[in-house]
Length: 180
Image 1: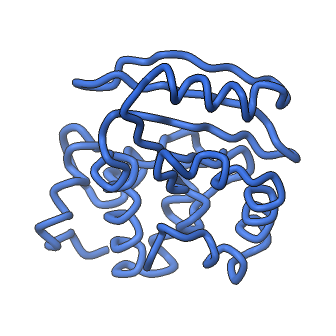
Image 2: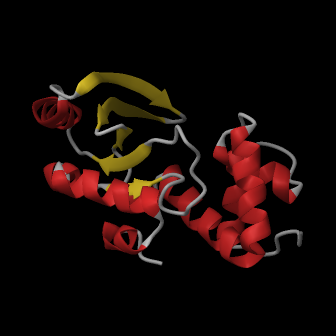
């Protein structure tokens, strides 16, 4: 699956088609193009719940340039906020706002987008969902509706112990997941 281009959303479920329309009609990814944006999170892999947001990761070289671009393009949107957030060993810039009923979160780091944890988790989770099937997908959604974040839900469903964010990344090179 190529998550680099959101065209696949046009052929998805209702929420995925809505996300595609919102992102394209508002030119969200086009406005972020210089920062190599990628839509990640739960909506691309069909495990979203009612209040799931559209997570867009970006890579910036210059923090001020990224902040200015995000503010210039989105500060007039409903409930716009932007902040600096320490994220593990590097700083992140995070902006949130609402467009047509969807919360949008733009997350930028100095790390190339395909090396960021959110993208790496997306790929691992997509592969695990394909491997374990619909019953597993429904189990993840149920756990999310009970209030669990995505990675902890996967860890619980797979019987993983330890930090769920780290444990899931072990599936990048080792596809020996417990069968359910």
